[in-house]
Amino acid sequence: AKYETLRYTKPSQCKDCPFSDSGCQKVFKIRIQTDLRKHAYPARGSESFTKLYNKRTAVERVFAYLKEYFGMKRTRHRGVRAGVDFQLSTLAYNLSKFALDKLNKQLNSFQKVA
Image (cartoon, rainbow, N blue to C red; front, side):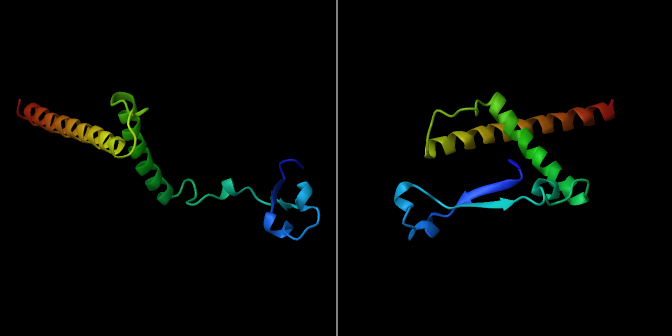
């Protein structure tokens, strides 16, 4: 019974109640009929879920790399300086990624010739 209901109060409905001074509030209970987590959109195993999952993992991979190697776990700045720090880190990441892609392309073309 503990996990089958959601409980909440509506203070707006207790405005005219004579017991509102004592801290008494009406508690509303809603029975949970279905677990909404089981019916997430898009459905697991569908093609649209696979596309979204691949996109999300690509972004999370970049954030994990920034946190691990560019010191983005905790920033020492606030506001605009924090934004500038993040943008410089992403710029450095993109430049290193671009340089590695170019180097790999040259190595692959060299191996094809040899």
